[in-house]
Image (cartoon, rainbow, N blue to C red; front, side, top):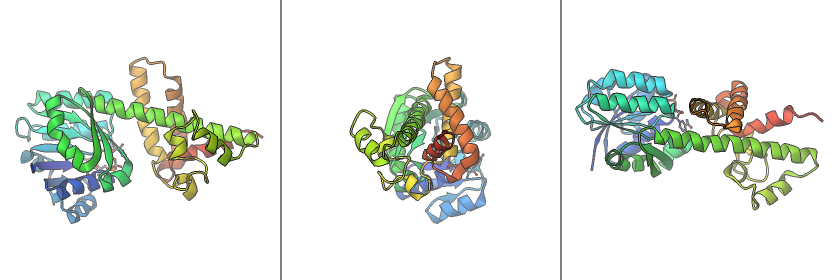
Length: 296
Ligand code: NAD
């Protein structure tokens, strides 16, 4: 079924995601504060909308791909009164779990329906429509959103009620952030013990140390030729984005008084690393920090 979608936020991720929805046969009205982003999406089949509220007023579904929770809540406050009753609001941004729940509440209070559906897979996944999407919200809302989510990705998982998609995203990325540091520390310890990268890789990748951080995104050059370490740590998954996601995880850890010592420490280490590396380095470059701060 072809839907009319208002797509707000046509940046690195939203631009190609909106283009994939249009390519799947949906009518996509796109809006962004940056005119260049709108022009680029228009070249890929998205209809430019003069205002967010104007696009929302004629939409069946409102999709957002914005930087952070404040942007999503601000946009909802701006457009909820313009939407037709029952319009489905799907937020694909990565935001605080508490903000995601607040966004659901505001949408429902205005007579709308809502799903949070953050994504994993990066710009490459957004362009190739191979993202994994993790959704929170009611069964009926997820069922309605599903065909759209599957037009932008390869898999959509219904994780539970409002905020469950964001919860799954930050829990997954907390595993990833901690495990990348674990793998990095092991390689640097191996260096100090005279163990070659390849030997440690050959053992750990087929033993109980196996994980994505090691066997796909290996932080040292050599063992996995496609990992960012082999191209001077060009992302990949930028350190700044890992720092953002771990910051969201740390917020949730503190709010829930969860004893996640490694998660909180990983958030600190990535925040410091991202301040130096920013958007230009893959998060696996943290191995160089581990090495530089080692003695001997
Ligand atoms: P981006 O900064 O490239 O895009 C965000 C866009 O939103 C910008 O073009 C900005 O102009 C626009 N915008 C902000 N406020 C607006 C408003 N009120 N109305 C209209 N447009 C507005 O960011 P991105 O990399 O596309 O990331 C978007 C979201 O996806 C973030 O929450 C990020 O954490 C998440 N994410 C990013 C990646 C990635 O690899 N880039 C991967 C997974 C998830």
